[in-house]
Length: 310
Ligand SMILES: C[S@@+](CC[C@H](N)C(=O)[O-])C[C@H]1O[C@@H](n2cnc3c(N)ncnc32)[C@H](O)[C@@H]1O
Image (tube, rainbow, N blue to C red; front, side, top):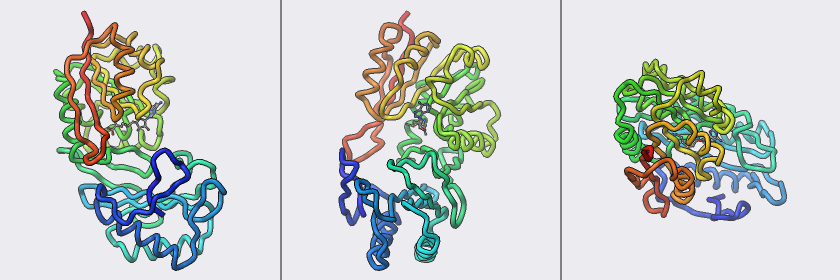
């Protein structure tokens, strides 16, 4: 039990302490490993499709909340309950203890049921004056302190005057959408994880924000002419896609929409550069601000402000 070796889906590296993660993350991981060895619980072998303990997610918030999701290869009520009870007793700091049965070939849990065993089915994060509820399947930036800086920079680049329609593509739990809503006429968020969209809507309610509208689905499919007719032509588009960047059809559609400003947030500068090049005949780069979101790694978050060429 350890961390994935880069570029090897089937290799696991045994590491005692990860210096990038906030405690009690290491303590929880080490405890589960020792418990498994002592109680003869087998670790999952993805090549053979054998074993019991599959993957482990640990999420911590700056508010001291801790979410743990244990993923098992198959149902074994007795072993699962014994492990979860022991873990809950040993770590009262865990505020959301969940588990998933994943008998599939791949490790993703987005299409599986997450069962909350103890505590709440979410953790809460604070960003500036806003609170965000984060469910087990929802994306949230891993570095809250730097994420806040990133959101402030996005808001500065957007320079909204309270009369703009803003689209927030790949909105996750609606963090950027909710963060900038006080300066916009309305904000439209699109995201394909439906549980994240539910969180996004709830985050607007919690923070008493009434001008955000969230839609669940693939940006490629949702962002069509009919959608734009129904929701209004955006003055500003904010886009924060996953590492793979945007689908070429999305960049095409963005060009067609031809809003005055695009703010492109990315955690992979290579795909960002590729997409910006696709937009280059219509948009020029006005400002760039990298953010050290993943300290002690070579990864960097980068924000680009694009404005129409003419
Ligand atoms: C880098 S995250 C950005 C989240 C958000 N802007 C934030 O700062 O918390 C990218 C998000 O895009 C979503 N996503 C990935 N591909 C998508 C697609 N084709 N259509 C809609 N959403 C997608 C992911 O689930 C994830 O929530």
